[in-house]
Amino acid sequence: MKIALMDSGIGLLAAAAAVRRLRPDAGLVLSSDPDGMPWGPRTADGITERALAVARAAAVHGPDALIVACNTASVHALAALRAELEPGIPVIGTVPAIKPAAAGGGPVAIWATPATTGSPYQRGLIRDFADSVDVTEVPCPGLADAVQHADEDAIDRTVAAAAALTPTGVRAVVLGCTHYELVADRIRAALQRPDLPPVVLHGSAGAVAAQALRRIGQSPAPEAEPSNALTVLLSGRECALPGPALRYAEGRLLQAVSPAH
Image (tube, rainbow, N blue to C red):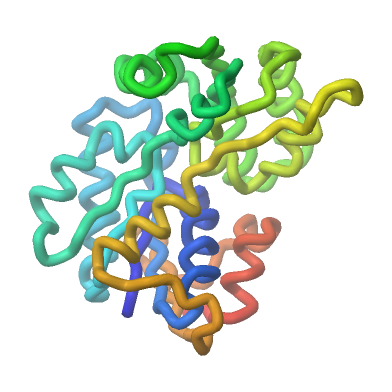
């Protein structure tokens, strides 16, 4: 079994690590686009073009499924990716975890890129899944880039700025960009108030990994023998995991059990 994941950058690490935990025996193909990122400022057609190139590079390696581990690509390119690759390769998109976050009754905050914040796509999800709770949309300019480059000072600044925009009473926060899940502990710490219960963060990595397994008729098997199959594609070139990826626990997990090539 082989699962491919695609993103503009290292945001795919969270979902890749989730797949690895559910099925250690799965081979992984990680396809990203450092030459073309960031995707957010591009037009919808431009995002689709880059996403198709990244997906095609992954498809050459014969995966059983492709996870689009990127909110931006899922919004703009999912239909094109499915039209080209399915039914041969099931394509699983990433949706912000607004529904489970709102299930607790709110209030809820959604941290996302400026391009996604206030977008018709995100507003539609709020309308469909969180219409009865108080929702605050929090733009996080620069946070995804800071995470991509493992820039510690920039991560601290951008997390602090987003935390300042998040109402004090919010106890559920949706991480609306896959990069943010790599710094979840730092986000949680920035939001924590000593007189309030812990903040619950809602990411998408676990859900999208589980959905990928369901799409190919597989069940979780966390005790399975670990696979040593890891292929890393950077704008189509086979490489090792990039240095910034190894600054995060998810990247180190993949490196520890899979010799990258």
